[in-house]
Length: 263
Image (tube, rainbow, N blue to C red; front, side):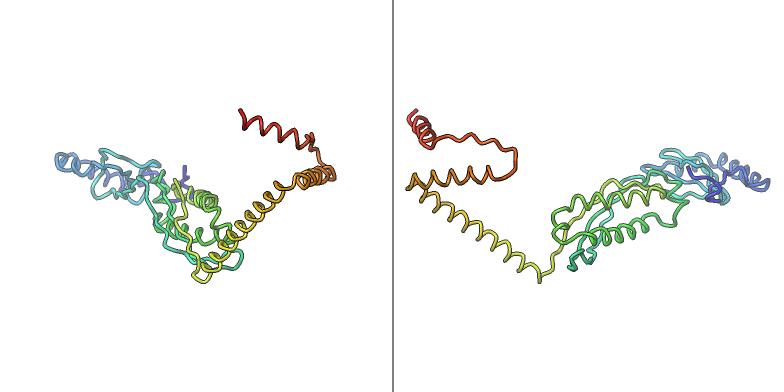
């Protein structure tokens, strides 16, 4: 709860003085006189209402939804919608850790959980949330390389949400979710990246063809297969590890394979 010392507007209405109580009494009398008509203005849906009476917040808790009793001439209402708000962040130009310029856009979903804090702590909570989300979306991805940014979008979004939540909690706002919608790679980098992916695929294809040719050569030469087998055992034994190798003769393995095919 916010204390009255930190925000003078949160002082209770009891400090309005004698003249203030006279005005409140007259306003209450006016409400009683116009009660059949004024009742229709007292019903609020999906909203909380922060009531100011003669410049002071009437209660540390917002009123509503439902029927709210207000006094004309002395009370001022500020409506606060407690539903989840979607904040679309336009593309932000950032410089990644590896000095590559790119654009990132995202979205933040938040809701006000304390109407009094949202009104008393900041002038415009929605505008402040939008500006803070823009700044955070520029700063957090800027600490990552382009490869990390492309591969770890979910983790970066969680970091953005944590930063926003820690700052906006004092405004009475909670962030439900933050997400990165798109990372726009510069056109100058798209062709080199595509060429790198293509060369990697070609290299893997070439390696698979080489392995296929080697397997065909070994299949035609049982002695070569035996030598390769012994060389593998020598390599494993030379390393200081805890691998336990139980060598089996090649002919035993071949006989087992023939039995399996025959069965």
